[in-house]
Length: 279
Image (tube, rainbow, N blue to C red; front, side, top):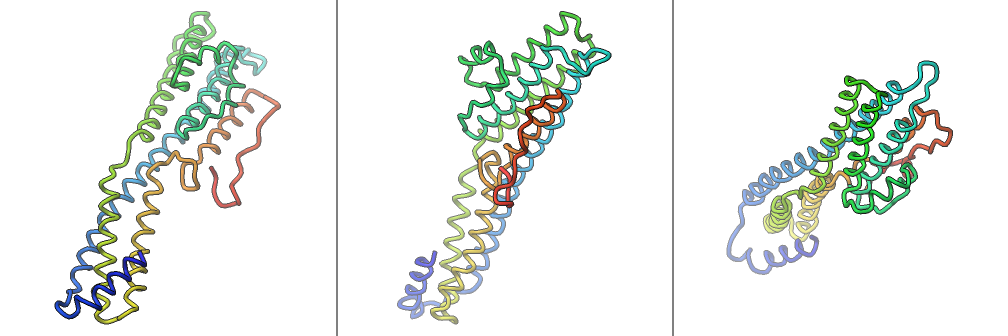
C-alpha cells in the first residue's frame, strides 16, 4: 500500500498537477461505497459466527439432556446406575461430538475412539461421515431399549427427539462450513480500497505534498484492518483465536457427561492460550 501511495504521489507530482485538479468528492464517494461494502461483509461474517455459536450452545444443552434422560430413565430405583447400553450410548455421544469437531476443523485426531467399542470402531471404517454414522448407531440402540422394555413409548419419543436435534445441529454446522462466502464481495471491497487509497493520495498531494503518502496509507490501513477483522469471522470453525472455541465446548460437555456417570478419570478443562483466547 505504501508503494501504491508513493506511485500515486509521484504520478500526480510529475504529471497530473500540470493538467488537472482532482476534486475531493472522488475519494469521498469511494469511501462511502467502501463503508457500505465493509459493513455488509462484516455483518454477514458475524451472522455466520453467531449462528455457529448458537448451534454449539444448543449442542451443550441437548447433550446434557441426553445423558440425564438416559441415566434417569434406565437407572434402578435405589442406585444411580444406568443400564450398560445407556452408559455406552453416553460414551458414544462424546465420540460423536469429537468426530463432528474434527470434521469441522479438518482434524485427523482419533483419540475419541476410546469412547467406542471395538465393534463400533470396526463398523465406522466404511463411513466417510463418522458423526452421522454414530447417530445411526445411537438410533439402533435406542430402538433396542424400547423393544426390551427398558424405556416406554413416551421416553422413547423424548430421546428420539434429541437424536433429531443432534442431526439438525450437525447439519447446520456442516452447512456453515461448506457454504463459501461470496468471493466477489471480498474481491470488490479490496479493489475499492486500493482505488480509494490512490484517490486520497492524488487529492491530498495538492495540499500536503509528500505527506500525502503517509495520510493515504493511514486511511487505507483503517479500511483494510476493518475489512480483515470482519472477514476473520467468515469461517467460525477454523482453529484460530477468533473462531468458535470447539475444543473448550466439547471438553466441557465431556466433563459434564462423565461426572453424571460418576467416572473417576475426568479430563481437565481447556485453558486459555496465554490467558488471551480459547480454542
